[in-house]
Length: 450
Ligand SMILES: Cc1ncc(COP(=O)(O)O)c(C=O)c1O
Image (cartoon, rainbow, N blue to C red; front, side, top):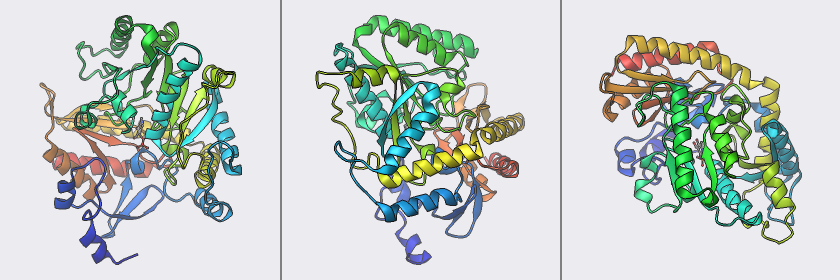
């Protein structure tokens, strides 16, 4: 590796960064994270902070899990790559598929299709959902319904069901036939409804209305995150996902639960759907499946979908979809080790306890700072803080102030993430109570600097 002068001089000069303006990266070079240990990261200048972002909602096991690192390393020597396109496979992928299936069997999942990440997993679910209807003889079902504020990755399909316009407008036209319902966001919604259960009922009514308008026989699937992550940690009422499930069932619409963030323990349960007591038809997974140590995702199908594909005799169920790195042996080895470690450490228990600590701590900060308009979380290690410049008018805070808060929090010991006027937190699920306290005091310093 070149020395730190070289790294700093070349920072952002040759590389465009995701989710940012290239000119901004040149003017304000990104922080260079050089190393990490447990739940902390260290930048190139030697400043160490608690990583309240968990990499990007993904480093569930923290940065020091040697079991996963050794499994990856060993697999690189045994078999660094081989294709899983039909005709060949590898031992690690077979074992990993069984482990993922078993972990989500209580959610009704029966089959696993491996991908390289979350966007791929969403894309796979959307495509297989359409194909499911073709195979079962109702090819008119091609449309998708989703929620505003939802984030489903950046492929064209995922962006089309995405519910935040900054991921959409410069890439339009997107996929035709995608329609959006209001988010279960009590702080701001078109019904002016602050009661979460009533808001859930309103959105359910809007869903019924949209289905009647579109025609049920044109809709392939409904996709939602059990708790909306990137859109601001929007936690629905406990009744919400079940209401949507019932509507999907009544109209023959598949329910896809996008578990890219919520899968593998983040909500305090192994899946977000299980957290709400719902069995979806399909699930998209990534992130916690390898704790971010290797890029892997998975699209899971339940029995109903699996039976249609596997009982097909027409040939229409052949899956002409997949990635060079689907079922990558090194990724699969990472999956096996990560699931073993996730189960051994029972990370969901700590996620629930530390999540409650973080949520309660932030609620206390909200009493101290008027700029905190809304605090969301309380279901595992996902917490969102919405900042406003005028609490009565709920005016979103300026980005310049958001950046000041972010920098002061970082200088005082915690990396947090900004998403529009929200501070988003999703630390490793192995985080300690002392580290949560450090995040809270860093946030306190951040808000004081606003
Ligand atoms: C719910 C959800 N779906 C899909 C994605 C896309 O995943 P990836 O960035 O791995 O493509 C994300 C990423 O954060 C996500 O949060």
